[in-house]
Image (cartoon, rainbow, N blue to C red; front, side):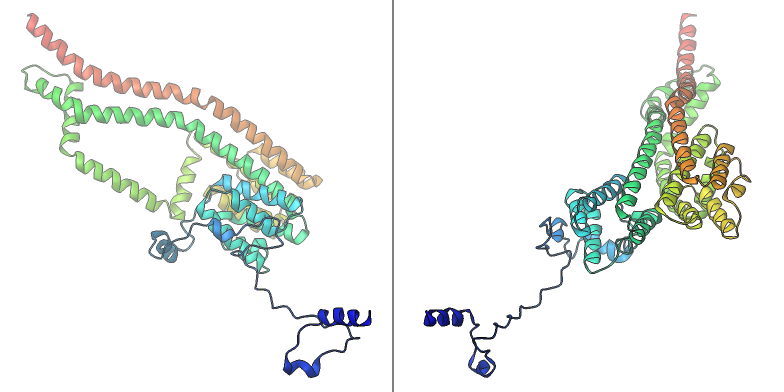
Length: 428
């Protein structure tokens, strides 16, 4: 018995080398713990064995070759040309919130988003965020590397959630509000598609007739000894201009498109264009209501997440695409810093901030229910925009029909009148 116990005890002892015989513990002492090799640092490129999702994030990103054009562009321009759709950002906020609420770690929640996204650019961004958060960086700090992708609104809501311990709730609020913004933008674009298609289709047909059909018909009228009407002369001159200078016209159009894209990068041009847009009939009213809905939604979200009023107004200004509203909200933030009320500044610009909006903000400031009032205003203006967009086609359609009728009538009169004169001369 004693020999068997000694054999079992000796078998449990670690094998010692001859150089370690002097330090071998006695049989009565507990065996020393064998020192394990240090584990390698966990990064986003290696799967976490304790992770609920055993996914290697780096395997989800398509490898780029050294001579790839995308690699060269990224080295030169950095993250300037990275683009992630609003839908992808909505899914990011929603899935991360659901994952954390379900008990998953932040890295597992990010991997969940990475598995489901189809955007290669967003996968690269998520891989970088997973690496940074795995190394101890806050989520908001990792997102700040991509300000053009997430925006100050997204980053600040996440930062407030991290500081207050309400990250899940803040991400849920953010996903809900971004979804509403996406729906509003889709409705505006959808309402403008029909008029745009009709307009450009009409222009395309007219240009085709001018270049391909009329040059074969109108010279017959010009060579005949009849007095041509003014409309026919004008049509002949226009057709000859398109035929003679068609190449230069095409080059001019291409130059104009590239020039428009280039000049649209400047803030002074954006501010001027948005200023003009707000004063266009019908479209200006829609733009005001859309911006009111956006301001109410974003400002209410920030205040609800725990951001201070001054910071909320400044962040809201950065979230606005319209440069006129961005400038006015920045100025309003400065007046708040000096101790003035937000509603007092808004009341100075009734064309930009309607009295309904200003009065509701004033009541919210006085009663302490500013968040609730802003949520009400967001719903109010979104419903108002819906009603306007539903009637937009019926408003624009008469003008489109009038434009098409005048254009078609001018061309028909220019062609039919000479034919009628020719038939009359032959009859005589």
